[in-house]
Amino acid sequence: MSEESNPYDASMIVVLEGLDAVRKRPGMYIGSVGERGLHHLVFEAAESALNEILYGTAGRVGITLTADGGVRVADDGGGRPVGHAGDEDGPTLEGCLTVLGCGVPHVDRRSLCGGFAGVGLAVVNALSSRLRAEVRRDGACWTLEYERGVRVSEPTRSGPAEGSGTVITFWPDAEIFETLTLSFDTLADHFRELAFLNRDLDITLTDDRDPGAPRGDRFHVPGGVRDWITQQTASPYPEVTGFERECSGMEGTVEVALCWGDSDDEQVTGYANSRPTAGGGTHELGFRDGLAAALTACAREQRILTPSDPDLAPTRLGAGLTAIVSVKLDRPEFEGALRDRLGNGPARACVAEAVREHVATWLRADPTRAAAVLARIPAVTRD
Image 1 (cartoon, rainbow, N blue to C red):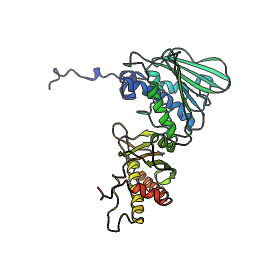
Image 2: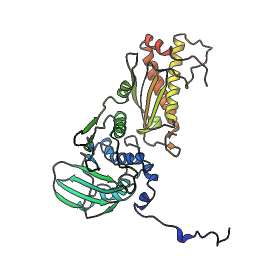
Image 3: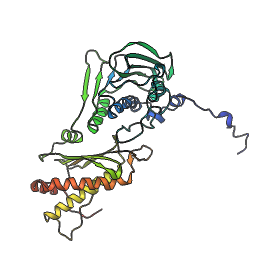
């Protein structure tokens, strides 16, 4: 191809600075500019506050859908550092709102891992027509205001304040999003899921958009995923079994809850650092390995399987099985473009051993229950 027929050259390359890249290609940061992306913008703002609870610097987070189309996220933490106030302890709120990745915690077992690229509050600021931040800290209240990611005034000390905390209020930009209508139910499902997976979280969601029909809910689940299974499943057996265990071999923890119910379906749901793993991964493989080993041992003890029979297959663990497998790792490795599959090799063996030990003990404690569970599992060869 001749140079005359190919006019592309260095002069056509545009280097985007600051938050311009986010506004130019929002889908790269929040997934889409439709409903999915709009809701993810709320999740991104909330995640920053929820991590305050998980790191022990806050106790509760409130998310409010305001009557004027905004979203307010408030925490009762110590108040984010404000550079204009002379705060030195960590990234300032101004930096978190204007620099991608600034203030985003290192991913470990304590932090949520729901964002697309670890960009934090800056992406919320960039994709909002307006954003207002209020910080109560050291007896003073500071206010910061932005329009489409650009600061419109110097941070202002607006007076004395009792207590401490940070409030971020933002209005998603109609120039970016195809719709500005948020679904209360979609948001509630997400925050409910996070509360089941993280016992320490205390979240309130309030909808003030319709003064005649306000809505609200609180999500705080000290019982963890066992409570989740109990709510999801009408089990004919007397209990849901579950456990949580530290696993040094994978540098993290595993929490599992399971039961067998009336359904003919099998449903195993996995999470890694509170992120759904729709693509599966090593933790889910480990769960199946451990459960198959425990069931096989029990079947041999009850002489349902003879010494010459093959072990039960990990891929066929019984009609009506419902299980949640949640791991929280200091160094999670996600695979695939959607980061929906866990790749940490040691997780498989660690989860398998923890599941095998717990389920074997649970089955041996009640032979009648064990026989009922085994009756739902086909004695088949390995796949």
